[in-house]
Length: 169
Image (cartoon, one colour):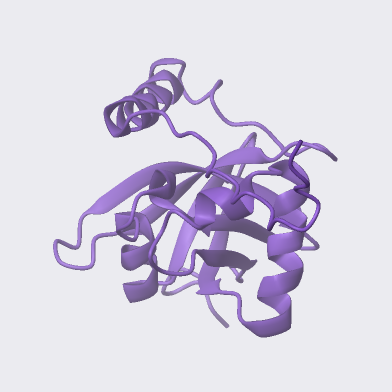
């Protein structure tokens, strides 16, 4: 019998991901379902142990065209928090690159639309929000280790709705 008590622990295998084609298809189907149901289904509010979904509108950094993406989020006070993970693939998600170029945008939540300003969390704030995400997904660190760069924790802060021209004092 061999004593393995002093052997280093076996490295943990990263969590399994579905094939990329499946992930991309799921995103397309989810957005289509949201549109087909007249925006009545496909978004939900977060619960204490479950993240919610929101529709984020971005403006293309090169095209200037509007794009919609549905992402998971949770609420942190008045802020909404999501991850720029791209299904755990290596490249940054296009919506995150677009949001960095045009950070003022809108989000649709279940039953409401909000004007927001997007930014990446830094330092202690990022660490705190990452820990909160870990309560929803215990394999988060394993998934994040698949990416060559750090996954951005994106904070969507409320901003005052813009006043249309001519409506001021």
